[in-house]
Length: 468
Image (cartoon, rainbow, N blue to C red):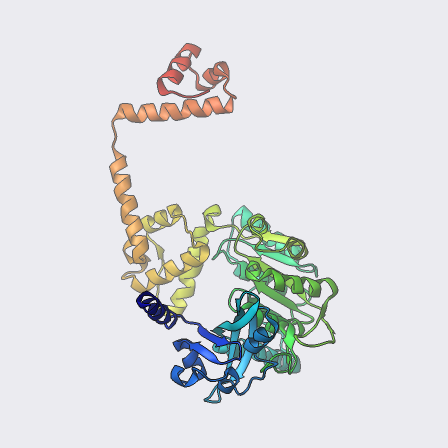
């Protein structure tokens, strides 16, 4: 009994530190457990809730709309269900609930519900949708050409390397098409810039451009935002158009599409197939004319292999596929990008930085830039804030880059002077290995290429342990 008591006390303490509301009710709907987060959410003391019926605590709900009461009645779990209710303070709270029946054999003896509070996320998301609708209405009324929401053009994509020039050429060539575009590449490469540029070069340039990050909000809320809602479709729902309706005639950009659940991906696919959207809870459909552009931060083959995205949806979205190369594949662009960012932050910061010192630029050209163009921009912004003269030096770089610079310099100094024989042997071994690779292991041809006797080459192959 003592062990059971200690176990119960510890479990309750743990549950009180979880940032989700947890309710446990018996088969009649009376509350037998109520954690601290749920109490704060509902604006009631746990002591006042224990022993009372769940509908007493939630007077805005009914036996038909309460997920807990539904589960007790039907015995089937309800997963990730969005619900809105009014708490004791009169505040409208929105949660995503997962409700599971508690059974003893076949008998239902209660239910447990885990509620995630998304009230503020829902308010912000709906406010963004409302603001987009207002802006689009204003843009249509005043006939402003800048009402689309896409702010970047191809001129804003900085790059002179062959890979970037080809990317811009390909992107420009597909701008006039209504076909879906998928842009993929590592974080910080500028995928959204490319999407903006395509829209602004398209016949839809004066029509709406709406962007939505699919990883930023819960899945059930994302469905409402994309497709819209009708009053009464769920508790607290109002008549509200979704992003598909708002973007009609223009472009809808869905970022991080691979983070969307497969269930919602299936609903998205149906909209893309027939261009008809049905608001959540509605029976009628609305025809929309939307060009879809998407972005993912991983290789599409990896996304498919790991089932982050449905095959059928992927092939529908990637009719046109464009890859944003990482910065390490276009080092020659670092010079022009650095110049661009220095000019940008000279204006913002009121500085007069002329450029980078030779040592700083040498470091930039050797650093791998895992954060890509975004990391380069932030590094330059940080350095310009710290620069004492009119140039960016290694000492003015952010601390994490300074540390890497110092370690690299120490490594170079240690490697600067080595015994001559050791250096010659190493170079010789590398050259022989390359020659053997190029000739497919033919010793005679490799000897001719290296301009040494065949016997000498055989001896050195044995000396260095080079495998043919």
